[in-house]
Length: 89
Image (tube, rainbow, N blue to C red; front, side):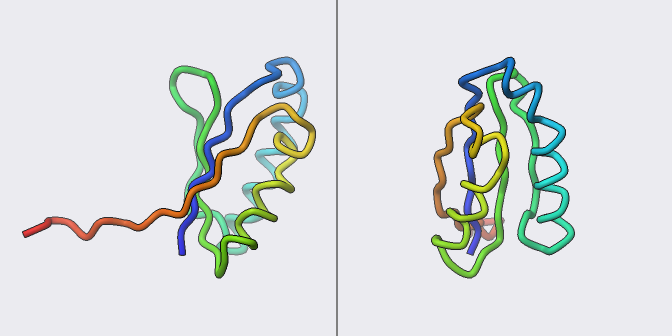
């Protein structure tokens, strides 16, 4: 199942400081097949990480362990997501 983490920046200074650890963390999860894609929003207010996990609990644990979340630089909103099979007929 796929889960989308919306990560909104609440402490820009702390976010800048922790961002290298965040990028290393999600890169490691990508290599393990747990992160499908990730990236910042163009408005600069945060970003999105898409997880591929066996359960919501696993996704929640991985998202909460992200350094930007664990250190309080960003808030976390985690939602289950299903990909629409296109085209819809």
